[in-house]
Length: 392
Ligand SMILES: Cc1cc2nc3c(=O)[nH]c(=O)nc-3n(C[C@H](O)[C@H](O)[C@H](O)COP(=O)(O)OP(=O)(O)OC[C@H]3O[C@@H](n4cnc5c(N)ncnc54)[C@H](O)[C@@H]3O)c2cc1C
Image 1 (tube, helix red, strand yellow):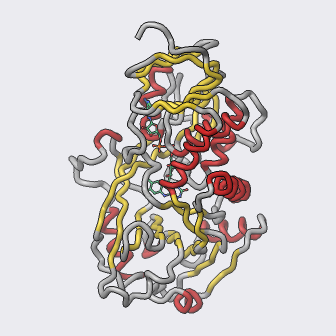
Image 2 (cartoon, helix red, strand yellow):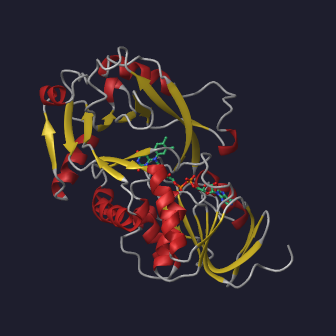
Image 3 (cartoon, helix red, strand yellow):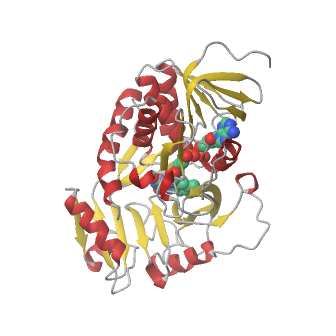
């Protein structure tokens, strides 16, 4: 490890999850010489971007996400065209909530104001359209018609392949050990040394570990997510396998939490239904459940299944793990390092960043190229954290 490897890149992106991969893709589209570094051999399932499916929707209570999702749908379609791979399946996205729920009403308002194709459903309409789904008598529901699922693993592969086709370089199995800021940034990995005029850090649940040596503490929490799959009590009887939407359950059953579900896709006969949250864990300790969980996520799901989806066994058939990296307000971090303008940070995707990744990548590439970003980034700024943890 003597001399830095070859010439200076325009940009090095650290972390080849979906956010880093889309950032590298947009940089390559802009003819930037780009290196994408990844600590694990690809593909891997240790971060946040693995698995077959993710929900896509414009149904958000924050107007900026609803508005940004319009361009995301276009960018996903562009990647489908370029790669020739189907990445999106339209199923509709059903939102269910108790009456008078503020988040539900904001979602409806946003969809209306942003001219999203959507409709309100009565309880009876929902139960007629989706046999096997039983709502509480007072529950309210609406449907984002173009909501659905993204084929996550395929999308990650497709964006990395397109990046490489445009001349981008991926080095996997190389963990970044040291970053030396400067006009030219020097990045030392476990096996090489690289230099670039700019770097973008998209290290998912490892973000804080990469940022601390650069003097930046962000109020990030990393959570272990139990990804649960559920089986029908009597195969073929529930009606849920043939015709099931993606759904979001907001504060149902008197709980302050959200649950979400996706139609049968990854495992024949199993439906994915998860709790939107989890217990704090370091990414390296994801699979070691040393402490008893503070949030009884699986029990909450079992209660939900018993009531809303009684055709399913109220015990998960398969449980897998994934990681969320949460900010206090669940909004992303898309910003420059406060001291180093050639270091850009994309982090804190808080369990909802996949659908927005084509645009996140575009925005991070714009920041890295010194261009005016296409969107107002106030909700995503580092300076919004006035907490003592956010220090330099
Ligand atoms: C169970 C689950 C369900 C979800 N459902 C949805 C959904 O329905 N819809 C939606 O929009 N979003 C969803 N999300 C969120 C979405 O998947 C994440 O926001 C997104 O994948 C985050 O991507 P990332 O690139 O930031 O992180 P990651 O995928 O974790 O990528 C970071 C990468 O950086 C690498 N790295 C870290 N440190 C280093 C280093 N020192 N050197 C080199 N490489 C390094 C890591 O190995 C990793 O590959 C879900 C997430 C989970 C876990």
